[in-house]
Image (tube, rainbow, N blue to C red):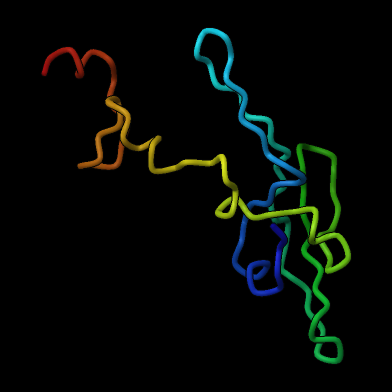
Length: 110
């Protein structure tokens, strides 16, 4: 997967490289991902319509840019194959009625 110019305008979170999901011997799941988040507006040029530059930040002190030359190494969080957002919100402790998490005490009362 790669980041395109159209996706770069609206995406907020980017992943670098290949994201991996590992299942442990006791059923635990470990996600291995390198997150970058947007740190400003996407820069585009009129004279070079295929070029773009996205300022990104990782952690507290790492900064950089996603450009058309290194965009093949990144993908957006929406494109990530291991991020299954729908299954997370079908957990028993998530109350979809008011979009909030419930405490374990209120789950036992039902």
